[in-house]
Image (cartoon, rainbow, N blue to C red; front, side, top):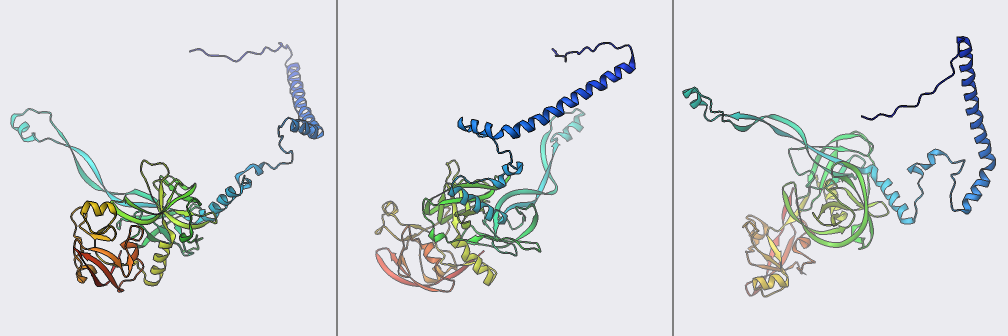
Length: 432
């Protein structure tokens, strides 16, 4: 191995030890005075010639730091936004971040240990010869509490009510912990899960006041509008911020997660990055108002994410505060919306409405005991109108039902074969 040595410095040999000590002391004094006066001269010359140097460098487009600049002024706290939009984004994030929480899911899961099983043990004892053959096996050895998932939520009341996605808190046997932006952690319990929308309510178990978000009006959002998403990205990076625009409105998607596959209608599409762990986080406008709940992203796509409009969550919040549960009117049919394509494939006489049909796995078209069964609806019927409103892809049967309450009486116009008829239905109730 090649090594480089430091050069040796040779000092003159002194015969008298006291003379050596005086020489070393004198040398140290010279060095100290040289450093001191050099430093002092630098300060004085800098103060005298600073303005002249600054003028000369400015003509060369070189900026010299302000000699009176406080070092702390370079910190992010004193950052000056470069344009009005950037300023609005920063203000929105500062306003809402204290209300965003990370949701951690833990659960008792089985612990397995490996052991080896010899199926020829009896034969080995019989012949007195080991076969040397063992099969690896696994058996449960107790349980351990383990983190099984993560998500995001945001505080909507001073007493710690949190809004998040249903698929984040779907497991009734799990335990939920929230981490606030100020570094504290609290236990949380599930108050209610929306039976239709991917929405749930949590309650932080803490005796303190929290900062709630301001809920905006999702009915007024526009395509192209700038939005900000905040969330626990990938379950690792808490309060991650991404910025984008609203890319589309009124989308219908089929989302899967936590072992659940469901169709979600009328959602907001955005190109603000939404990753795993962002679920349940807020989508903001530039006023810092929440206009949506981040809920899904398209795997393998570039910046295609979806958020549930906040006005749908407002319904759940108000209903829970009044009734301590979330319920929906329930008709009790499985259906596909009729389009020109569905009309052609099924040889139907109309190109609109809701065709009552079995599920993809053969589930009943009409739910036993439901309002639809009681009213006499059948598989193959096409619901054309719901209480006078025409059913179309933009005005689906599910969307129309949501305008009513359990127990409301409505009239359905249906097509059975070639015959149109009106059927009275008293809507049932669906709860979580």
